[in-house]
Amino acid sequence: EAQVTQNPRYLITVTGKKLTVTCSQNMNHEYMSWYRQDPGLGLRQIYYSMNVEVTDKGDVPEGYKVSRKEKRNFPLILESPSPNQTSLYFCASSTRDGGYTFGSGTRLTVV
Amino acid sequence: GQNIDQPTEMTATEGAIVQINCTYQTSGFNGLFWYQQHAGEAPTFLSYNVLDGLEEKGRFSSFLSRSKGYSYLLLKELQMKDSASYLCAVRGNTGGFKTIFGAGTRLFVKA
Image 1 (spheres, each protein chain N blue to C red):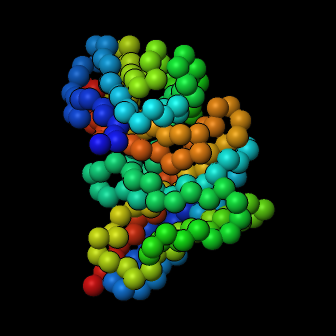
Image 2: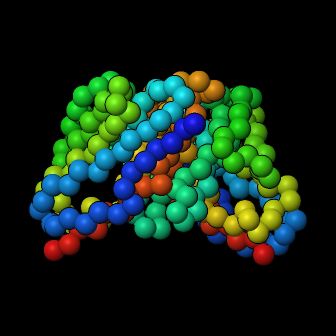
């Protein structure tokens, strides 16, 4: 089944404790992206990647890192999480001309 | 600057037709997308317009006017399951095809 898999689905962590949210797609898509979704603000792009080893900042990249060492994987790293990073996170992938396929989401709470 | 505007909420009756409008101002244009998002779930891709005109897909149609920076999503024969948020998104043609989303329109379908 064609899908984007992100883990974990739910995570509660403490301020400052490094964490990684994994994302993997099995559709051979070139394009991958991370979004956060907050009430009233919609989906805001954190980082995106056009292909292996090619990444760029979205609109809200502060406090996040990404890497794209393999085509299928695009992990999101929070080196020192803070409470304002509490949010619902989505990973998505697409071809250059297609719509996104989204992962199921990761609900992160930083206390 | 970059901006996407769509109404916050709409209400319609089962069996009716509803039109959800979207206006945008972006730096570069490489396609306009509509997504559906049910509460607590990930967005799912509905439609893609890159040229002016109407694209029809079953009960859903999407229209684009690039000169006006305007799109709409038309939902016919509304069903209760169409109650969801509808997200308008625009992909640019610079900076790696960055995609920005509107805040979404919550559609309530009543019996």
